[in-house]
Length: 105
Image 1 (cartoon, rainbow, N blue to C red):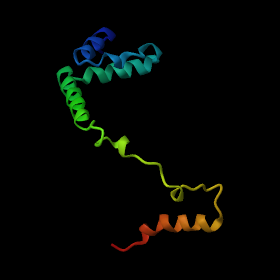
Image 2 (cartoon, rainbow, N blue to C red):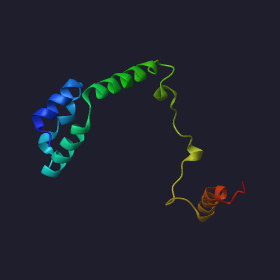
Image 3 (tube, helix red, strand yellow):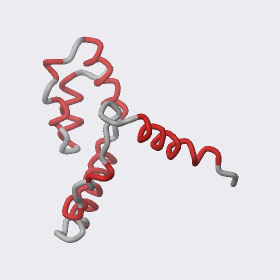
């Protein structure tokens, strides 16, 4: 099995040493499982994957293209509570939810 030091070196090569930030909080079983997972990593491939992810994220970070910039609150008519709704509304929601199951394709 990979040692902690070897795992740390492997992750540092890929710029991912933060993965071990909470190492001291892991149980023996958890730390063993993590070392096993890290042993399967190929640092060069991991580094390339992380670089590609950062690049992809930066392509979509313009103010108008970001998802959070386009988010809006859910309109009140779409918000409901099973606990606070009457039987009629609950039946309507149930009918709406099951209707697609009975459509003939």
